[in-house]
Picture 1 (tube, one colour):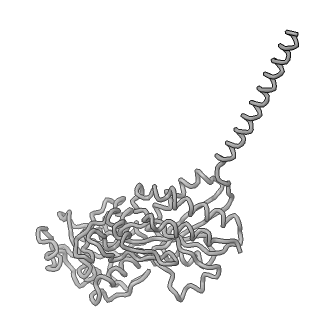
Picture 2: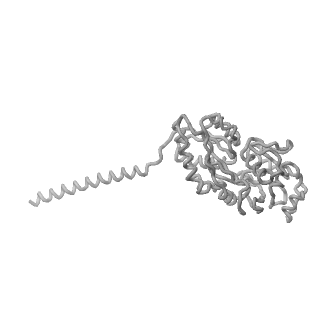
Picture 3: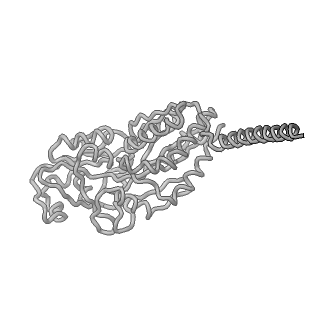
Length: 356
């Protein structure tokens, strides 16, 4: 009797252990399902365009590849004009631009066009004037400098804005962009808005600058020309200006306050701005005492339709990454992240990329 009882206990213990093992296996399997990484996608995404956003793009591409190693993604710069042209021609799968496509050019995008705001940053007025570490400028004065109506650094108009500065009689050497550029577009559109009647040149990706002015290709090219030329002044994105060790001016904003180009003053301008239905927006010459007046937007643009399903998946994954991880990385590469209020619309736009 005792032997039968012992055998029964042993059998029950064995059944319990097997059941426990099965339960543990099921639990482990279920746990693995909930922690499975995102779908691995194989695709190639080539991009070109804005040099303004290039350092941000390079940072997020490097981080994104750790999540999606089978997506080959590249960005070649070349200016916003090149990016828009390459996307319209189907040369690239995506582009970077700091300026909008002209209404008359929309028909070139036969597979549709979508805007995705990614980050923002100030355009600086960087200068190279010995002994002048601080400088205040306003839009009318800047317009006259680049139109060569103000020709020396001790001009009365500059003195009036900087009464405590020792300004030399050095000749001013304006430096502009030589390529079609969103930086050029935003700078000239700021002057159009903030110096009406004073700035009389064309505003856009290209401008009819005086023929004898210095010119640089891309933001790095302008930064390099300023650094090498005594008396130079030019418009350069914040990231490249900092990387080149340039000094930049504070600019009087719409409220009449002299504001330095910083990520915080750029964010202040964005907070005074709202998105349009197509996710375009304009923070130039924004309201507010602390808003930097040449706060500049930048977008990734894509087609609305692609024939390759993997390209669609890859673009959606990349843009989703930018609106989560990318926003936390922005400050580290000298960009202001988007306001939180922009993100729901931006994420919803991703669903509009389709196969067809």
